[in-house]
Length: 152
Ligand SMILES: CC(C)(COP(=O)(O)OP(=O)(O)OC[C@H]1O[C@@H](n2cnc3c(N)ncnc32)[C@H](O)[C@@H]1OP(=O)(O)O)[C@@H](O)C(=O)NCCC(=O)NCCS
Image (cartoon, rainbow, N blue to C red; front, side, top):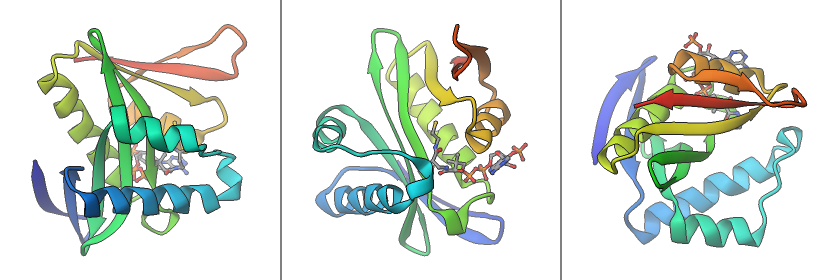
């Protein structure tokens, strides 16, 4: 599915990765994410291979420039979100939430009954994003992260 809408005055296009160019756009975003030292997010070769082979990847574009993605895979009746990322210069425009909405639609289409992700307790932006997308947060026993769950 390929949709375009206006959000915070931006022309936002959202699509499921289907071709080689879109896969390259996804790799570009992974590189951007890697450059962000502060996120502390390491991307291994295994992650590239795994995501290309097994994940459902959704991309966001503003004026045809890739600005964000969300990825995840379905196992039994649960859709597990691997990562949601928006480049720093386009954050706080509602793009993260739009990506999650699309991912939720996809998870439903695939027959998932719930959607799940893990968020570090220090990741304020992501915790807020999960909450505003209707996820319930459950702290792990060590309270270093939260499991975010939403019934579909
Ligand atoms: C988390 C992330 C994807 C959010 O993307 P985004 O496009 O800025 O999110 P949105 O604009 O849709 O905002 C969603 C909600 O989160 C809030 N939010 C966004 N950034 C925030 C921040 N830094 N601090 C507090 N709240 C924040 C927004 O205000 C909004 O809340 P509302 O619905 O109550 O108005 C983005 O910050 C990011 O890419 N972070 C780095 C990667 C990462 O940590 N990913 C999550 C891993 S679990």
